[in-house]
Amino acid sequence: MKIMNSILEAIGNTPLVRLNRVARDVSSPVLVKCEYLNPSGSIKDRIALRMIEGAQKAGKVKAGGRVVDSSTGNTAIALSFVSAVKGLRAEMCMPKGWVSQDRRMILESYGAGIIEVEAGEEIERELRGKAVHGGVVEILPRRKALEMEAADPEGTWYARQAMNPDNIAAHREGTGREILEQTDGRVDAFIGAIGTGGTLLGVAEALKAANPGVKIYGVEPVTSSLFKVAPEIKHYMKKYSIPGVEGWIVEEIQRRGVVDELFLVSDEDAVGMADRLCREEGLFCGMSGGANVFIALKIAALLKKGEQVVTILPDNRYRYFASKHFTT
Image (cartoon, rainbow, N blue to C red; front, side, top):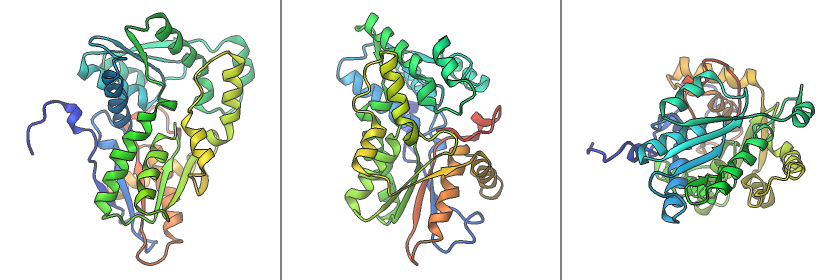
């Protein structure tokens, strides 16, 4: 292996692994792409690099500039990681009280600033006691990121992960292309958890270009389906006068009918499968990977002889020691 010029060159080209003990009851191969092996621990490294370099080429991010976004999860970590390597400042906006201590420590380790935004009395009252999607609780942090960019347009760039076309391109030209190369183009079904929707849409575009008949299955937490709350998020966007929802990736997925079927997975099933993947396969993945495999096994049981299913293990298990929950 040659010497890399920076750790950013280690992003992508992750292994595709056949499940053995976990998949012993199904005849069709179940293949998992180990995205948790990316340098900062998740598939989001791909989009962070693509979005930041796209902004640099467009002149939106200058040397020593500031990168901001609204995220409490893997994207915040990935943007902070890539920013650190490139000598940029990262500041992540998030709802107060919604970031776990372990993720806070990771962000601070990369030198990122954490801006906690009060939900506001009215929105807290509306959401109190509800199981809500991250897209809802991040509404006011999103407005904060927009305000930061507007106040300093020359020095601050808001990544807009949920509507950035480079999010999709990173997976169409990276993740999806790699899957086709690793399988020699033999993919009959793909299962992907839906966060922003970038992974699912980008991989689907690549796979369907090679095989229009491939089936695409979406996976979401039973307690917080983005497909179901998309109208609610737009409602709050309008209510709190937050612009910039045009081009939202999940709406594009819905409009184009990319997903053949959507599955909702419980915490219990996602965590249980993630535990099995670790103990029976040695795959140190997080809960969304468990949810993906839980559905992949169901699909594999329905496939014809010779067909195979591919899914993603998006992140590592370290981020779930404080709280084992399936979130996207």
